[in-house]
Length: 241
Image 1: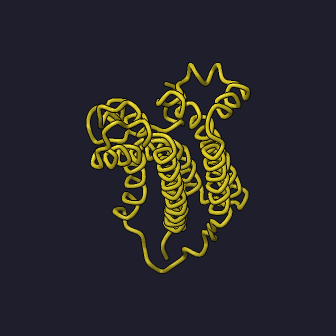
Image 2: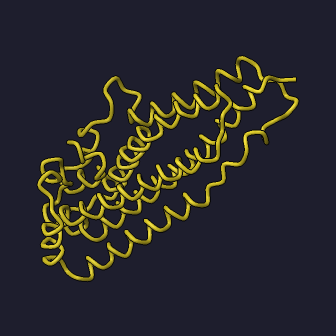
């Protein structure tokens, strides 16, 4: 009979896969935020529209979005490995994972919403200096100076994506780890794969590149247009810059 550890490790892979899929869905939602930013603001700021540069900007944007979730998944990975080792899978931990992702998605949505109005005015993302001096009145003044239809469209889209994110989080079903019981014995190779591969993928996402230097501002420089370059970034990455 195989050891209980391999069942526990297989279940940790199952949980990680579900959280990874949830993260990819949120990366897609962040791309939709970027698409709306492009249609509502960036498009009017570009003098000479180059379709390839636009695609390049969206591609770079996905890398910056994946970087955010790479860092967010890193502590989850180590917690899952600890749970797998001790073979402890209490249901309240799954609630904590959902609360964690819910809080993350709320923070991303709020930062993206506030950042939109700054970008619409200045053609660049907010940085830490702007966030540290931010107040609701500041955003309100920026909203008042923009066309009302622009404000309403982005507000409705933000609320819709926020709700969709919460619906996805709520719908995640992790199952029970004893469901992984099977007569199939685990090999050392399988154990190594289940431990090492997720960590490598998460680290790769967090670095954003296989190059010696991690993903940085220069990777967003896809055009002579500052607005298009800034669109590739996201509000979370810029928060501490």
